Image (cartoon, rainbow, N blue to C red; front, top):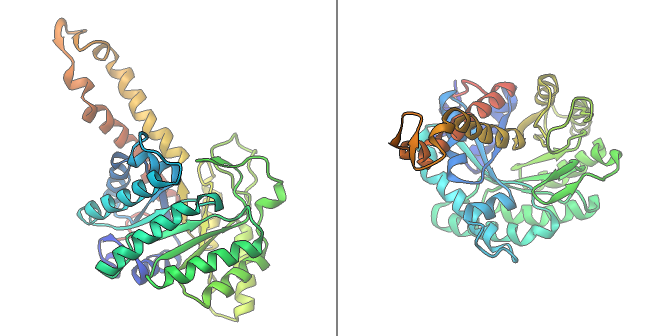
Length: 358
């Protein structure tokens, strides 16, 4: 039985989203979450997943969402980020079903200072729910890892209760992801802060489960945003197995992996680290830096191959009067970016065991 025997193609939410993550956990694979900033990057990710028969997660960060709406818009009150995220989610909904795969629409890291952005997206979810019986987005992430554990849980619970009413999934972070990404800079944090404790995981699991089962935890096990030289990042995915065992002991349950874990800072990780993380209950892994590079690489390679045709509108190696429009048409060079990015998305899926799952 494949995933499409369980959930429909297109954007999945609520209990269908839970079924997707349960299927991933049961079949020992995870789904990459691709940070997208445009319809072009969304299309590249959807095409990649379709071609290898896999589910995919499209996610928008606060900065990526603002870019989606247009850099010319004012964003002092997060209005551009709200508009861009909502527009991105609506676009994914418009095209996802045509690709014939289950698609999860997610918003990435939302720190305390960005809560107006979260509020705006959640308002759009509630409005969409009234009209369609499901939220606009499949899920959202709250990253209050810079706050105390108590404040983190308390704030997340406040939002979780509101989200549970519309069957929207919450991803929360406990334990800091190092490095810097999209305005969230944790490059100077103490190393010990990068590792979450099992007692913290249990406190979250216990409190959230009393509200809903639609949640996941991004636990710190040495994760760092960006790509670094080998040896600079000390990942310990085996800690996730210890967290699972601790929660099992508290619950006295038969399920060996009761917690849905999320892997942040996945770019540049070794295949062995990724495999270990998935084995211990990771069902989602963020991929951003590597796909950004792949998109750029497609453009760079195209320019190098067609350099003689991209210097002037008229005149190229074939003759002074030869036009170059077919070479500088954005549909041509952006398509090369998409093809390059799609290959990298497929590689991420393969690393996570997420191939031929439909």
